[in-house]
Amino acid sequence: MWKPEPSDVDLRYLVEQDQLTEDGLLQAYRTMCTIRAFEEAIAERYAVGKTPRFDMASGPIRGEMHLAVGQEAVAVGVCPLLEAKDAVVSTHRPHHHALAKGVDPGRLAAEIFGRQTGLCQGKGGHMHLFDRELNFACSGIVGASFPQAAGAAFAFRHRGEPRVAVAFAGEGAANHGTFAETLNAAVLWQLPLVIVIEDNLYADSTPKWAGLAQPHQFQRALGYNLPAYLVDGMDVMDVRRAARRAIEQARQGRGPSVIEAVCYRYRGHFEGDAEEYRTREELERWRALDPISRLGGRLRRLGWADGDRLARIEAEARDVVAAAVAFAERSPLPDPGEALTGVFG
Image 1 (tube, one colour):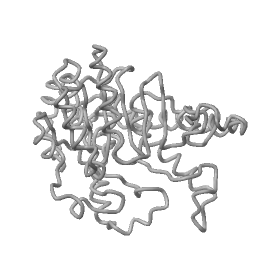
Image 2 (cartoon, one colour):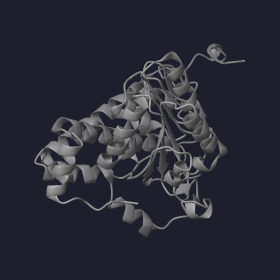
Image 3 (cartoon, rainbow, N blue to C red):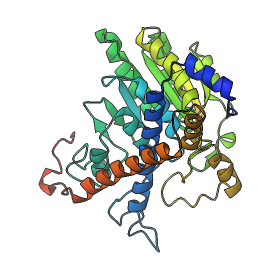
C-alpha cells in the first residue's frame, strides 16, 4: 500500500497539521541517509572474503546479516518521537531501529564486527544488540519482540512511569502466536505498548499471500479492540503521523496500538540470498518509491533544501559511517578469557 505524492498545497497542509518543521524534516533526512550509508557500508565489508564461494564464516564480519535498505522511513517515522528511557525491542533486522533510536554508530559497528568496543563487547553480534542507556534491544528469535516489549510496558505501568514500549516486527512474525497473545494481554491490561509491523511483503522468501489468510495485520488487530493504522511505510511523514497518535495514547495511559507499515527491502532477506522469489521488475517498481528520495523531493518543494544542501547532508552521513566503520576495524577482538563473562548459565 502506497499513497500518491501530495500536491504542493496538500503537502503544506500536511506539514502544518502534523506540526512538522524544517529542522525536523532535515533531521529525518539526515538520519535516513545515515542508516542507508551504514547498511551499505556493512554490506560491502560483509562481502569481503565470501567470494567466489559464499561462506558466512569467513571475512571480517561473520554469521548471518540482515539489512533493511529501503525500510528507513519506518524506523525514522517512529523512534525520534520516543524518549531515551522509552523501550524499543527490534528484530533480526535491527540496525535502522538502533540508529533511529540514537545508538552510537561506532559501538553498533564494533558489535557487528565482533569487537570489544561493541555494545555487548562483541559477544552479541548484529542480531543481539543491547544499549542500556537508550533502552534498546533486539532478538534473533522471530516474533520475540512482541512479548518482550509487552514486558517492558507492563513494568512501566506497574511502576507508574510515563514510558512507552515499542515492538518492531515483520509481517511474517505477526503470523506467530506471540502476536495474538501479546495483543490480548496488552488490551486486557491497557499496556503502554505500540506494535509496529514492517510489512515488506516477504517472510524470508515466502510472499505474504502464500502464508497469510488475512493479509493485513491492522485488521487482525482491530479484532482485539484497539486502534490500528495502515500506513505507507515508504513515506516517513505518513508513518510519523500514525506513530505520534499511538505514542501519545500509550504515554497518556490509554492503552496499546498497532501500526502496519507497508514497505520494501531492496536487498535480500539476508546477505547471500539469491532472491529467486521476486522479479527485477518488482524491485524497480519499489525503488521508484525510495523513502529518502521522496523526502528529499518534498524538502525541495517546500523550499527547505536544494540539491547542494541535500548532497552535503548525504556526504556528512557517509563521513559519520566511515568513522564508525574505521573505529570498529581498529578496535581489538574480545579477550578469549572473558568468553563466559556476562553470560547467563
